[in-house]
Length: 183
Image (cartoon, rainbow, N blue to C red; front, side, top):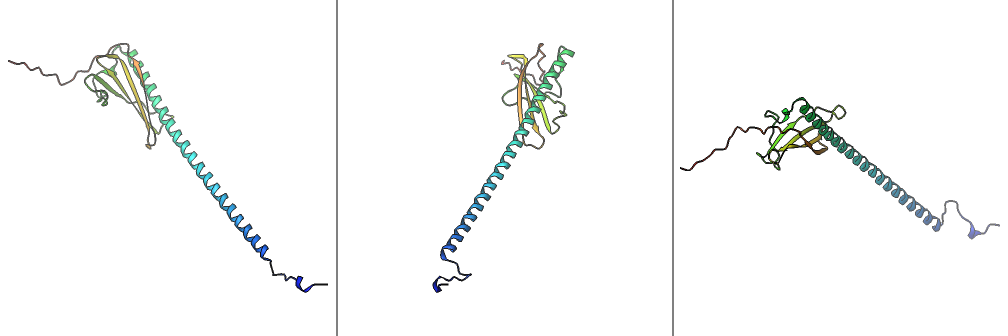
């Protein structure tokens, strides 16, 4: 027998069931938000890692290009010394360049050397500056090789000192010092 107070209609839901559904909905929404935040931060982390890897790769390319230019300059100075006891690199000519601010003239002589483009590093431009102290050690040259990628993203500089077995003559300056005599 059916009791009149115990009868339930099919569309009737209890208050407890409505609260349980709302809580389930809030939990599901918060879980979806947490999952989307986690995926956003992991994607951002991957992007940062890729950028760091690219920057390191470009810096390595620039460093390798500078080291290749330095090796070329060493070989070029050796080649010039074996072909002539007086290396033409130190002779007067268009290769002589102004020295950097740290190496003030007339004590220092600077020569710019232009290495050929490296076939494996076509997107790098390199140059070498040979510097020697004419007074204290004219037989030692400091080679400063620098390279930069053509897109301007990375630069590198390496340096080494090279012993020159013979002493090349000092350059002749066109301006001689004037002597002032009194009386």
